[in-house]
Length: 374
Image (cartoon, rainbow, N blue to C red; front, side, top):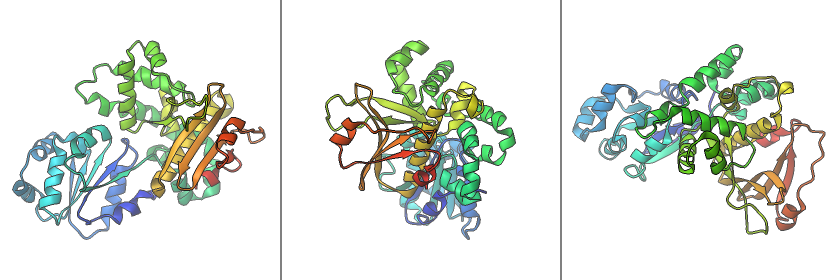
């Protein structure tokens, strides 16, 4: 198994009197990580799967006395796909409050359902972790910096899902299966999602607009739906860890865009599978967008795993002056331009540097990107 950064953070929180929730898209390795974590512990483990109907029935409406009987002598209760169990938040609350010797560990691939069912009952009773496709740091730790840099084209085209990394010779076939079988699974389980074809159209539209400002009105016209429906579906894609949004940065400088947003994919391979493009880099017209998506998604993983409290943005004016990526945190403002071709000379917008003189600016290319991601 490729070592995951999150495992140490979770291990430190075991038996601290709170439930542990691990969110992430399907197939990113949540179950593998937790099985490895508990494999070497002395405590007995009860492993449940929320996808199984009898488990959902038993654990959806249960008393603390019944829970004690169900759990028995086990000290760790490991629930996979917990969001599939009705009232699971109340069930975990009961265990945390009444069965204090039991450590609950629950995974969920759809944070919106799990969060809706858990946030209120589990206030102050949980540690929350997110797991993403394999990060640049994890791959460098696994096989070294040189080998991972040699794999850059593979990452940009096929991404970093554990199965894809483990079986690179089958990358295209496996990605198609991932995109077809799991991508919409959580969404289609909701009673109010009636149009799977519309989901697909919206996601394809987003995949083709990576790196550009996204207009819900334009997408709605493109796919034949109303703006409200498009906005709702995009929010659901975020909550199932398919995409994330980057808002525009603004401190009331004249002509700055204030309410715009860009959308990126957590994994380039999934993005390419959605549009059916696995061409080599030299045959592609979207290398700039892929490079931008890769760097931003990897940076998001890095900062999340480090626990750094930063906010991420892009910056643009109505005159199309732009900064690819702006990061704001305790260490101030950092602005980055991303260039696939390291020979291209970059001039940062004077509007930006004059209005934010405290900002540190840097160009990230294939020559120095490891410093940005490690």
